[in-house]
Amino acid sequence: MTATTLFEKLWNSHLVRELDEGAALIAIDRIFLHERTGSVALKGLAESGRKVADPARVFCTMDHIVDTFPGRGDDTLMPGGRAFITETRAAARAAGIHLIDVRDPLQGIVHVISPELGIVLPGATIVCPDSHTCTQGALGAFAWGIGSTEAEHALATGTLRVTRPQTMRVRFEGVAQPGVTAKDFTLALISRHGSA
Image (cartoon, rainbow, N blue to C red; front, side):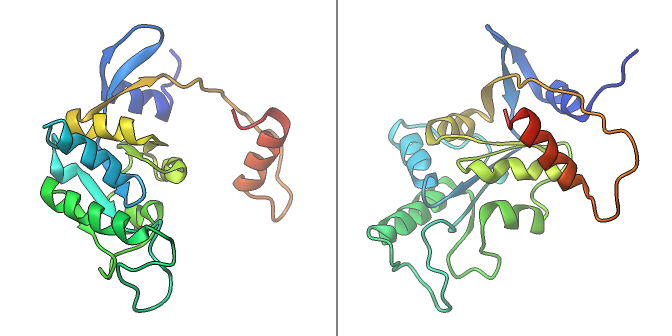
């Protein structure tokens, strides 16, 4: 009997239904949004007359367009930034989801504050319209970045259609030299085989 990998455990425990062509419907535990794409997903959901399936599982922070200087507010150096912030705030409040607003002391970069605030949990499935979401895997979560349309679907159903990713077993043998870390092994692996 082969041991079950962490990925297999996460996949199997969140599998709702097998679909065609290697895809599956996966239950989503946490959905993160930010003002750049979150407003798009929330607005699309509202315009279609649908609601967030489970607002307690959805978290939104202002992090992509807000300025970084002290005392910042809704006005930004990015043209049109104010609209992203105010529209996301209004949509998040209307949807009843957790909002970490511009001046909230907990505000920060979505994929940084999510583990800091204990929102990411080992064994959870996490999605966000941000490519850095996969970094939550370091905490034992199955996490990946999605688009606004996928976010809208996840918000409405608490699930997402996913093609099962391929996995690879990697085994390093021998003794690492002083100062060599797991990150060095990972970078060497990626340089040899690619990130795909």
